Image (cartoon, rainbow, N blue to C red; front, side):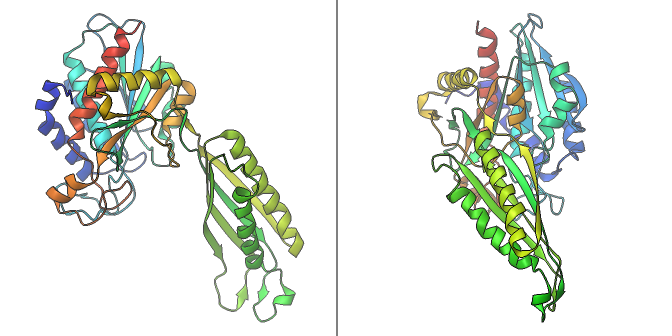
Length: 400
């Protein structure tokens, strides 16, 4: 694997930075310490810093030694942690109860910092690199918030790229997905209205619990009977709330959950079928239903040419044996999708290994999976990821 020697020599320095960020996790739009740290380092490396995008997000702008040129590339790293406990027992464990870098954003941030450091000392290109450090990826649309604050108006990008570590993929391998790579994320809340009353006299009520139970069953047919089997889609009811007493039939029941798809047409059909069920089925029992359907993150769709370019850079840098060209799409979601709706680009996966890096060295007590309290980022990826970003930037400016 052809890791840049200067970056490899700085591995311990950036490992310490990564572990410091891990020990001080900050959730969506609260990434103040992390943002301050990133800004301080970029400024030390003479990279111009622009703050206040998406509240805690920032952009580092680096012009080549041959001038700003006409070409601009954006590289993005997410900074936020998760509101969850950490069960690890190593020295850099979270110092904030109920907060954890359980998805590796500490690693993504450090990888981009390491690449920025190298590029700040090797500016042999004509063009501009926008290092985008994004807040609030974990369900709070930090990418969109940065765009709403004028990200691409003030820092236009010809192309944009992002990566995410992935446990289970061999350490350091890069995986690519053509087209729709990650699902859209959508939430729903359903309110069923009935008529409450004494539980011993149900004939005098319109029981919303019975109605809601039938709605749950009917919603399962949206996927099994109304969606083309060849089209990907998930509908999960994850909450059911009704009543507060043993002897009272309530007048209201509430359901909520999530819908994931890889295609807007499929999503439209699912929402329409859900609305039909929710609004008509309760009427059979004398009740009523309302669906509140919210589209949170769109489908992440990689652009063909940028994806091919990103894959070519990976093969040229690390060899074809370190590249997985036709990786499976994932039903998780990512707000990098908002960037790709605006700017051509691609999103890829960097293998985080099987967790042995953590278990052998840090006495881990559980699986090293994303969003798991025993997860930890694999620090051997820092020079790999940084090398990849550097080679991608260099190839981008060499490309006609």
